Picture 1 (cartoon, rainbow, N blue to C red):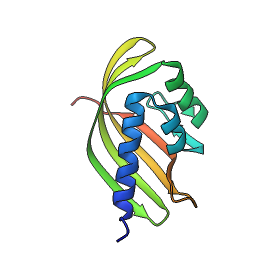
Picture 2 (cartoon, one colour):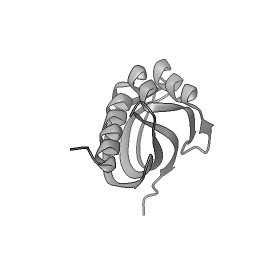
Picture 3 (cartoon, rainbow, N blue to C red):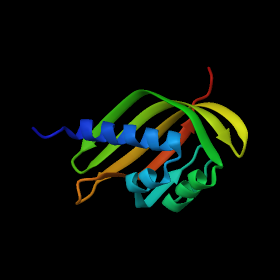
Picture 4 (cartoon, rainbow, N blue to C red):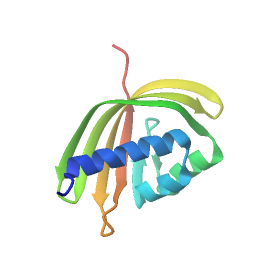
Length: 127
């Protein structure tokens, strides 16, 4: 039986989480579309190459990525994911611990691989 789109995208999300934790540039390269447009929680728009370089250089190192509140909206060969993440690690050598909501758009390509084509991050403010 074929795996559901939700299951496929959730598996891709987990691969992305593990690749980010390990700064595994090869895996990130496979999971991110060349046409990526991602808006960071700082308001900057970055490309796939920018994202890969952040990991390659060691500027960003995650110690933990704990996900919750994930919702997947499957739309055929495209899926929208909204997820909350508790992130900790270092950015430019300085420690951080943030509560962030991510929105990601995944696209299914001809080779049956799901890739992130767009995304956005927002820091959740303490209430």
